[in-house]
Image (tube, rainbow, N blue to C red):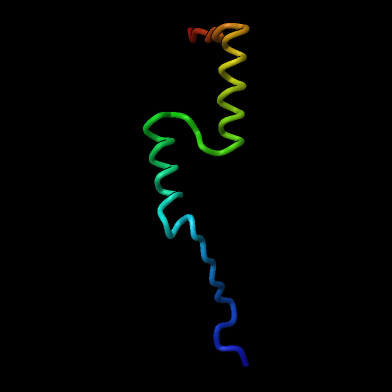
Length: 61
């Protein structure tokens, strides 16, 4: 019989050193995402706006 059935132990050295928290704080203060997907999305939006300009919003009547 297992006593600790269903309990899992995850260890992250990045969380232990506070790297994850630091990355999150930098991303929120600067507005630049630190993940690869977030950075790609932000650069893609920036290039799209650079080439085609900002999209026009439809006015509500």
